[in-house]
Image (cartoon, rainbow, N blue to C red; front, side, top):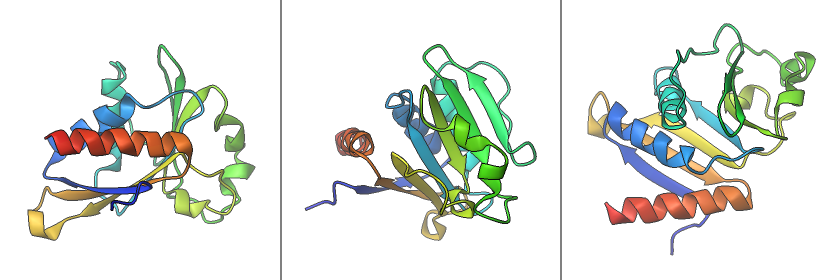
Length: 165
């Protein structure tokens, strides 16, 4: 029997990553927290850009690698996209005052959450993008793990959608 708290999907190219992002976009609601991990170049910003497009955001989507935070005002909620790659301590995000942005009426996507893991609240969903050498240069594997009831509900719907394909 499949583990209801985890799911692994093959992503053959950036278009498949975009489809996954669009599916997850339908699950987002105020307070949702998504941890987004993976080595440099695995598609974290591509995923977030696709997710924002699926939510109807028409503007430029930048990686927050240097700014640490990009904010997007959407019709149903604010979305905060964090990048903790440059953090040297798990307290850096608290010192920056970012804890005020997570939860409540906003959605938070946190890249490199492992750089602040001891201080972060638990996510609804963890998504790890990995290179898939067997699938070629553009192939990735998406490893998803639920961290809450709404994360499990998201995985159930993703599993059902992937079974239908």
